[in-house]
Image 1 (cartoon, rainbow, N blue to C red):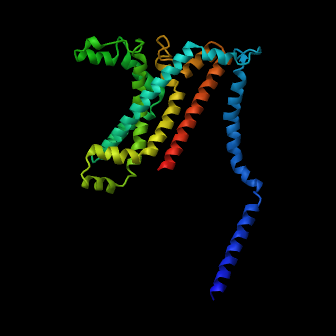
Image 2: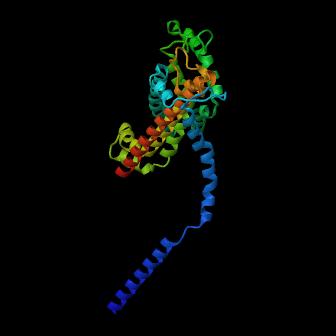
Image 3: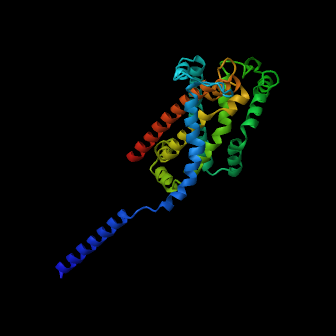
Amino acid sequence: MSQTLVQDVQDAQGLAAAREAVVMRKPIRWQVYLYILPVMLFMLTFVYYPITYTVGVSTLDWNGIGAARTPIGLQNYESALVDPIATRALGNQLRFGLITVAFGMAIGLTMAILLKAQVRLKNLYKLLFFFPVVISATVTSYIFRRIYDGNAGELNALLNALGLSSLTNAWLADPTLALYSLMIAALWQGTGFGFMLYYAALTQIDDEIYEAARIDGAGLFQIIRFITLPLLRNTHFTLVILSVISVLKTFDLVWLITQGNPAHTTEFMSTYIFKKGILEFKAGYASSLAIVLLIIAFVLTVIQLRTYYQNQRGV
């Protein structure tokens, strides 16, 4: 009886293996490629072709309009590497990114934790925190240009009303303060997005975990440090990746408020590329700067994704 049972099991295993082999040898129907064809066409048309074209233009001495195009090899890249304004723009963008990403995540997480508690008018606070995110950069820029105006700005008016006239300043015209003024505008507009991500993630954490920690005698800061922050690890990584991409793409807010002034202290790579390519008709050089920025974005994305996957394996 046992031999018969063993034989039946072996036969079943052999049949399953044969079926698996048949499935693996089954040819993939060409119709399945029709499902990804629209996406591939879109990517080829609006992503890969523009990148390839920009790489080609970056090797030319061309004004972007005329028919005269002179191949100059990698001279544009060599010029970009020694361009002090491009170097300064990268430095500005790096400092801008480090500060806005760190403070934006910290403020967003703090607001989310506070609103996760039982507070009155919670929905109103959510609306107020997220409202700046949906405001266009044009409106945000106008608001902060008015606030920072050195002559009739609301910020200077408030300082005068508080008896702090010595602190009044031409905020956007001061080389030491202009970039930080931009950071405040960016934080005001973007922090609500991080807040909503953190709040949504906090709602997925079981309250019994917090209750067990309180029973064991854990205080508020211990709960945040050893429970909340580790459990929000995926949200941290997501926000960092999205924030870095957003910083690298930043253009409208900077251009509409300062246009890179004063003296290039708020210059970003995006605004410098715009000036070179559109205002100064140096399409080749602007393309080389764009490719440099693309390479930086690619390297940062790879580093972040590798860190994320390594972190996931360590969980």
